[in-house]
Image 1 (cartoon, helix red, strand yellow):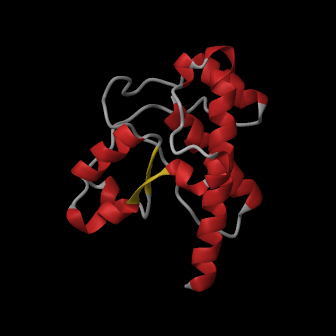
Image 2 (cartoon, one colour):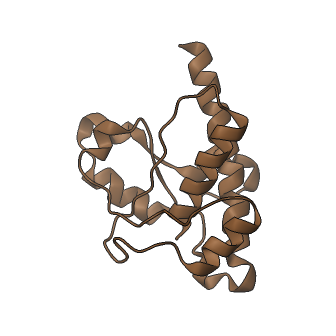
Length: 147
């Protein structure tokens, strides 16, 4: 449920740290395993401890119209990046990127699956998505100033 974590973190940090940006945040997966399900309770608890509310989030699958609707579609790992690039209409492929590109200081390109990270897996995911969210907000600020 790293997607829901990224949505909750980015939405909260954008409101708190970059209210001047008018952004829409949503999360969706490339497979329909958990459609309609809330985030994992462990993920929700880790997020709650940091002040992020995930209670109302529900899993959904990426829809064809998402490629036109959103300026960026950010994948959590290379596997999902490739799926998104294959599904994206050619005119929108440049919108598909890795989320961790916005946190080069971490030295990571993928957000690991928290289910295999032991007791600290969900905390590690939050650390990474916080770093990438702040990097993304900086990117969006620069882009807004340049426009």
